[in-house]
Length: 303
Length: 136
Image 1 (cartoon, one colour):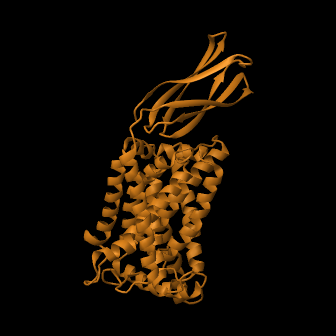
Image 2 (image 1 turned 30 degrees about the vertical axis):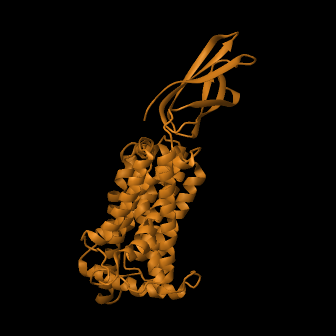
Image 3 (image 1 turned 90 degrees about the vertical axis):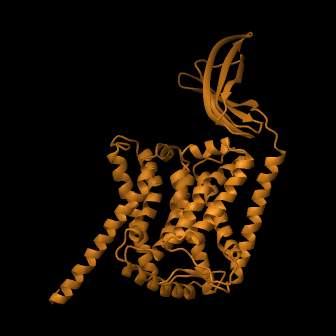
């Protein structure tokens, strides 16, 4: 700290880090509030079977790390930084969930410890995803973003070389799996919003198989339309001589399967599939995959 | 793959075979799922809810006795707000009753619950039956 220049550099670093923290906290709140205000999710906090909650909490770790590698609090370039960002996001998710649940009087000092823990833990998962997304969505100028993209592009190639364990050594496919991963995150995020509510199973009981069929077609059409047809910022372009069904088979259909898989996982986590006939499971998964498909498509556009 | 660059992201013209493999696998799954639901849509008859109740266990609890049971809905229509009444019968006369309401008993699925009686039924018969439901 001898010279002025060095001091300035040191000051700059914590400041931008604190801004990143603030954005993370804002993101946790913005993305977490619908769930923090859902009664069913509070209830799930104490009746969810602990091993399912544990699995969800553990599964959230690699998800956050991979997501942090894509959108961090700061421009991440190494796995160590991705881990650090993921840890911070998780912690922010826990702190924000605890703070807001306490604010709403949903957890009090005399609440049993196990119930308090369950409520905070289950909320921390979407809130931590929100904390990471806060960085990317509430982020700074567009110039920053472009730099980020470049950095990530270079970064992605490095990982491919390092990641020899991957079944597919080709760098093309890592980008493909990343695309599928982003869709999974988007689907998971919207699913966590919707799945705990009773409406999901109620809708599946109200629907006939014909409704379910229509829902499948509409979900797939929305997914494809979101990404390729409706001109949002970030809409994907197809090379001119590629027929539309190329992207449909390579991205939309796998994306829908990802959304279905995530739906089934979330329904199972929340105990909605217990003692249920396979057809009923499928019906509720189709209902939940509808928001999941929208989330997956949106994730491809935004992240 | 998707190229992310300053301009709009665009899909490559020569995708890796794994992308096609995933695509075809997904297409098979989606078609399978549509087929499954489609068959259900065509062959499924609309049966009103039909319940079967089986007592699965009982044990003494503080201040009474708990009788656990499963309620299964064998039909293809889900029942909501299913009211189940349990009675302890002493020589054909109900000496005590208890009631529980299930939010849902889904089609071809089962739910479980318990009746809490103030006394142990012992040798007396316990009768549990569904007395009503509403359509979801």
